[in-house]
Length: 165
Length: 294
Image (cartoon, rainbow over all chains, first blue to last red; front, side, top):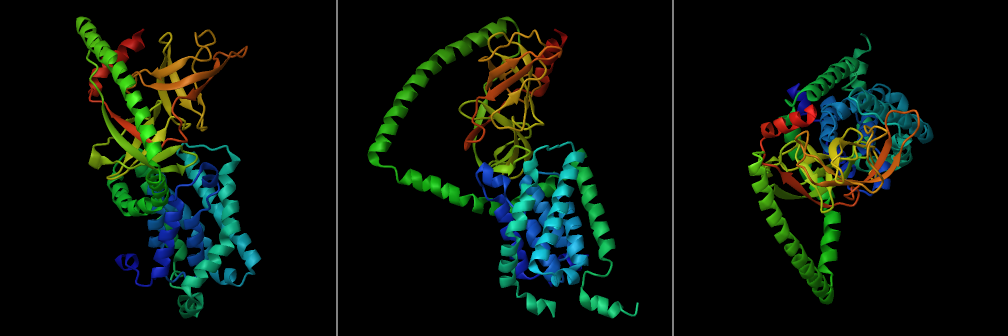
């Protein structure tokens, strides 16, 4: 387990991209933009789960989720659980997902983001925080729209070819 | 089993991925259960908060920089004008304060005669908001003071105009506070005009509070000022909260529909003040019990 935590396979691009995603999450924005803020950490985790999952150990997902919990002031473990459940599919089906056309892949990402948001929504509901506003689901849309950009950027820093062989 | 070697070549995580995900999921769920029921995870939260703090400080740097450069670019004549108006305002508030001091002394004397408990003067701690929009649905904010400055849980927060909220989670260098507009927040208030007590509940909208527990015949009207009543212990009494915006008395329903506009501009505030009430909690209990008995 300690071996997993100090995962030697975790590369600097991975750690860096998660830290940048956390920073984008914490970035102060005007209210309207904050409503549309994509789930940066979820997008980055989806990318690594699909294209370089050797580097992404589950511990890193948990730590990123706990960092989100601290940022948002939510229950400890809430975002961690949502990230974990969401990344199960791309980690399991990565071989199939990788050969998807980019349009199909973007659709799959929308589905994963929905799972993520739904988990958060569900846990919020269980702990007594209810939201009726439809605005809650806007980040799925913006996240899906911004996904191709995330894909290109992370491809640039991750040198994914070398990992997939 | 024949294909196990190819499996492991495919991915390091593939073996037992499902089982491991389940184990970690169980870990997360137990963390959440513990966090909901007790404060035992606060050290973990505080520790991670220290790790996350540099990120937060870094991303709030641009807006601070803009503030700073706006200040640095002000012309001399503007500064002089501002200085003059501040001097005038200071004079005026000092004059008012003299009257206030006199009133306070008188209040203490009268209270002594009634042998009521003293209202001890409050201490103030200035703080700044680090992240306004920590979560649009919780209406919580992150402020830049934590346990290192003596901030404690449940501390009342005001700005120049009125009550903003109270702290809910304390980190070492920053804290999370809940705004009075959060749907989960209820604030004991009273009407200045006649002392009518009730609760102001957040609605999830920054510019609207609700007073849902007033009967149809309650003496309240639009324009009434609401201040904290001090009951419940968390908030010191007498700070402005809101102004009643509209009162509806729908037929056939036991309660009237009262809406109020918060006195503080919850969406525009940047500097705020935490009130440190030195009154021990148990001193307020008899008061609360008395009012319950009424």
